[in-house]
Length: 129
Image (cartoon, rainbow, N blue to C red; front, side, top):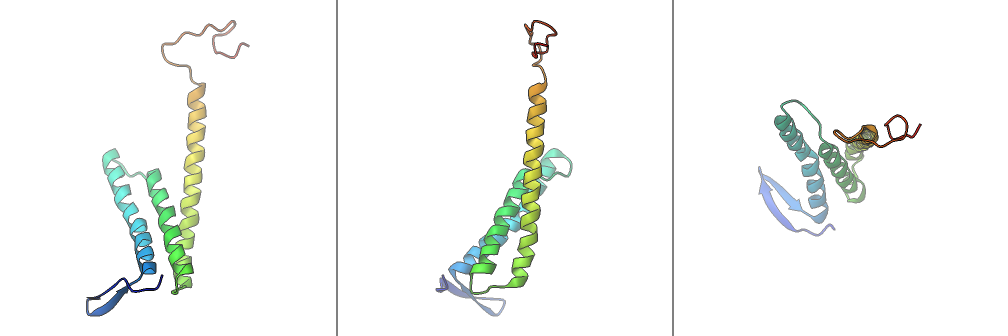
């Protein structure tokens, strides 16, 4: 994983690309690109919103960059801490989003269909009470 894939000059600095660096770059790009997703959905909605995809991309980006900082020869504790906290926040927000969606689905299931007639024996609500 530490073999050199390519090497080039960037602003006068020698940059060596290894498979581990590619993994780290993919994680960083995933984590950064979530802001474009959030901006797109907010523009479409006409108000500021945070879509589920934002949190999914946060979680994936955090996991990939955590792999880079923990498993690569870099083993940078600052990078671990920098990506560990967003991981938990993203996971918690996905949990809340799923929980709220489940509540919404249960509430929607309780509502009678519009224009339907119920042949319930007593009160017409479908409970039979």
